[in-house]
Length: 387
Ligand code: KIV
Ligand code: ZN
Image (tube, rainbow, N blue to C red; front, side, top):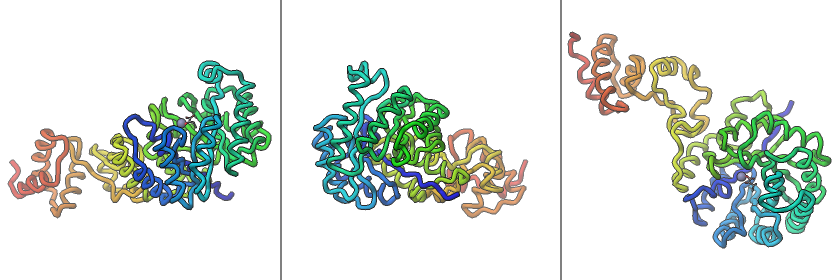
């Protein structure tokens, strides 16, 4: 069976940039977009052009420089949004307008003060208008995660008839369980007329920590595009993390799914986005966290030193990290100490190791982490006779 290519739709510059306090200026956004293009993403959601003159300017600037990826602009199902998005994308090689509306009962009743029938009419009008400007139109059914499946299928079918090329099924509130979200995608795959001619897309938020699991459930049930952000940044608890999805697909080849992402660039881009947006990455973040390839307990360190794969499922080089690290703390054993001593030039005999290990534990108990400088001092004690 040949591999299914999963399209990576990056929304770092739109959903990601909605994080309070991480506003970027146009030249910073253009730089992020260039790096995303070099990473190999298929679609870059560059912004929400109607939202501010600055966002319009950024989408326009990105549309002019990005040549290989599709450049996408967000709009509500509102005429002036769509016209503005089209205007900002007019210089793009591959422009896409992303338009849509809330489809859950709560969005229809309380946010939009409308009825299901009127929402379908607005969806059709929005997609048709967007289609009059660009060939590639993505329709989002906001809060699809909590939308009744029969209604969701109906509005998706109407969006396809109006010209949508991509159907985005957002779990806007991060509510779904993986089985539930996967079943929703499967239901659409089986019940929407014309669905086989369009791309089904996942867009999951992380309110319950399940954004990546839900996105993977989505592709396992027929979605072929995943919407995600670098480091998982985004509204509230964030969006699906790009690096997680890409590495899940890479580490599980039996799924027969690939992406065009050059995974060796992941670590550097993660740091670049974190620095530029001033959003730190939690140390234990999967794939790109500072501790993702760091081992500190004696048992784990001993295993990794003997064979890296005992406690690592990813070769750090695959994601652009030079090597795994053996962090020396009071939980470290002799194997780790000998390994780190060797790295800085000391081949210790068993007796020498016994001598310095005691001093090492004293330093380790007093400090969080033992550094190479500490090790040089500890090593100077190695010829003392044990008492
Ligand atoms: O989470 C969401 O529903 C969105 C849409 C606007 C696509 O970000
Ligand atoms: Zn979102």
